[in-house]
Image (tube, rainbow, N blue to C red; front, side):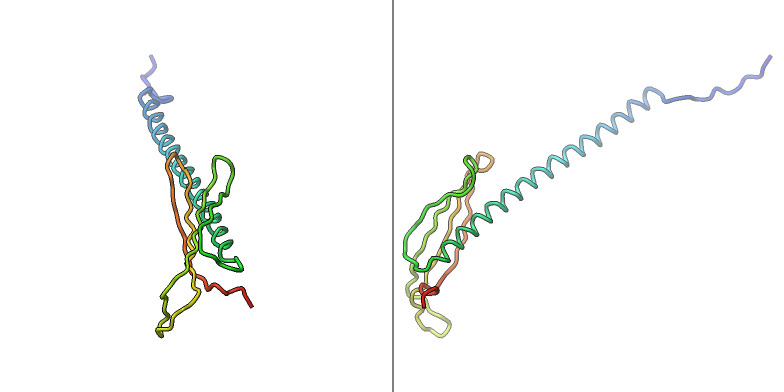
Length: 138
């Protein structure tokens, strides 16, 4: 008769396989959620950059006018369904003084207000600056 040899374990138990699959599932779910959040942040950053670029363009356009006149101008930029609407307001500033108390004449306040729809909600942002009225005149 042969002496009894200890039985060697081969393969994995069913419980070990279930636990390994559960750990893998949790890790895969966390990775998927992280990728989804990164995609949302990237889309938001791209949208913010697009609007900022449009606003810079609208402000540059208002600043480069040879002659400033008070008033409001509406315009749009972007593709259909993804457009940004702008309201550019030019207003003459009165009673504006420098540090020495001298009246600054023909100074204009320029404001660009942008509105757009993002994720079903109305978004709004504005930029403003001041400019001397005769800046581009000889």
